[in-house]
Image (cartoon, rainbow, N blue to C red; front, side):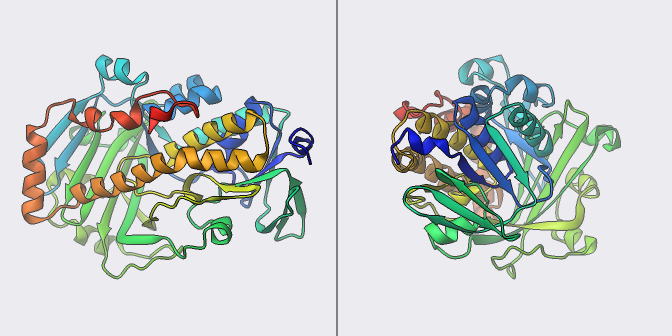
Length: 403
């Protein structure tokens, strides 16, 4: 096929989460037909809250959904870090006019379901996007001139390329990269979302507040126009091993992990739902995640730790950068290689940086004391200065300095 005729077929996208739907929308906005195949029965997100720093809103702008996201966001006045054992806030970073002027957008807080709902609505408004739910892809074949995928129900779909947005446990990654199971540092996450009215006034805050403890972390912030409150906590379990299963824990076991926490944290822990838990996983960065007419995106390509809130943001960035490159013309194979070459260093930096932030949260003994001392002495712009490479700059394949 020539580069022009190969586009007679849509690009196939496996996975209808935030990354997959954002990719579909980004492609459609640049004139490329796409077909999203999702294994769940409907396109919906079961997650809870998510922090959306300015770089996420730069992607939303390119996707044409900034106003839709702003209408359902909550906006913190500070980012704060506290010592979980003493209850002391040791660092505050204001989210003020100077912050917005520096990075172009505020720091926002959204519910994952609200994000996906608005992306799906935008996709449904495009004739170039086909959405198919209830079909689990079991295999794919890159013939050299097209890609054919097969599903568990026996259906097959053809495309000029395949973008695999099938997450941490990506079937496609096992084929393209073959690097085994994701890794875990042994942390178990529990979380809950409750109405703001259920939060005692003395424990409510408009801030993003992160609490660090020895092998522990805890966070809380408002969502959805400050109508609901997101709470999460994780703790280290030396018995955890990598795997897709959800460990079962009791409330007594969970609360025991935080027995040394300050009263504020203990009071909010009561609102955590322990009926479903997650093991936190990550992977080491890789350089190769594109092969021929197949490429990976988001967590399938570069799953990261949670500690700088960039997993979904990187998927959004992937989406708009890949769509930009594909729209430049040329072959799908070359576009996928260029996308990989442009994205892998930035995403690798995210993966390494996030793990280092996690070490700060979970510090023990002298390391904990040093952390508190250094943060207490840091100026209010220290966090923004540290992450300016991430939050600042323009989001474009032609901007080599955005890493």
